[in-house]
Image (cartoon, rainbow over all chains, first blue to last red):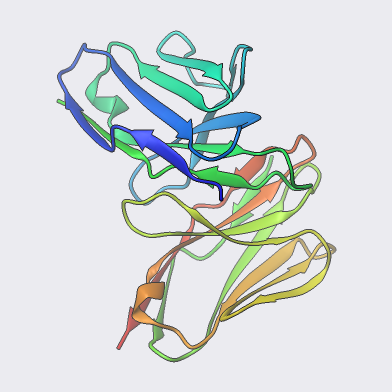
Length: 117
Length: 109
């Protein structure tokens, strides 16, 4: 199997607070994890790519000091939205690859709905 | 720039067949993916094409023409549960996925 979990599934927070989202590969070791953001009726937007034990690679326009990514082990990556503001409200999705297949299929977590008041 | 185009929305009838098209312009090509995404949920993998031709998997089939930068997803014997968004994504020369905006498929009884 290839199951990816995310926690929490839904979070509501006040403006200015920080929120941590966890992404775990439950039954495999993930060589690479990806963090996406998706606004309503829009496509997935890649925010960053992370490999275990190294710094994440952020996409252009994504503030690395605002969206902190820690990939501490082969089964866990965390995304911390620091000093969240209402414009950060979105659906955040992580995915992970096993690195076994030639095309590196991405297995997606169930997503986290963040609402910043 | 890199670009993936697919229709925004399509409507079909339960039991019928529908074809969702995707055209792409990317820097390099290492395969094309189709994902299904139900509202409020994460995408789930449907198919992967890297060579020209048709890949059939049950009620779903996916076609690729690399020379035309074109793919389609064919859904047969439509069921109400097939109502979802269908995302086309291309893996470029850097093995990065470039995502289309998705096609919302509405199934009517």
